[in-house]
Image (cartoon, rainbow, N blue to C red; front, side, top):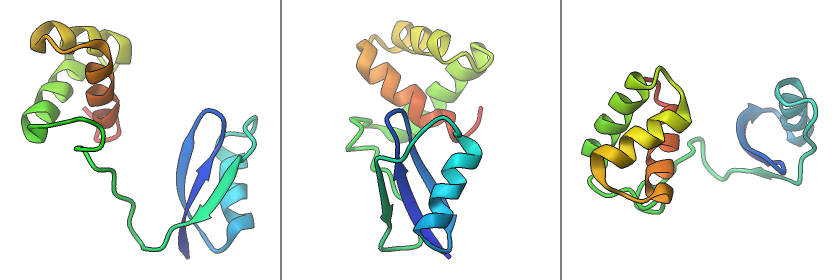
Length: 107
């Protein structure tokens, strides 16, 4: 199996599949109303998102606080963003990036 990146108008889906058609099938199963714009076979077996590229510095502290804010907000992303902005003084875009990058880790 290979790792594929499937881009749609609303999402970037990362999925394991045997081939491009299999990757499209994963997309249709999980997001049946979305059509792929681009399907790319990744060159390696891992997907990495650079926190520096997202503008997240002091990553461990930011992650801990973001997860705490998500917990306080009971998983409500918008509320967690507001809490994070209040507690850190960062702007909306920075708070959004931090909270969204930590949602996948679980809270």
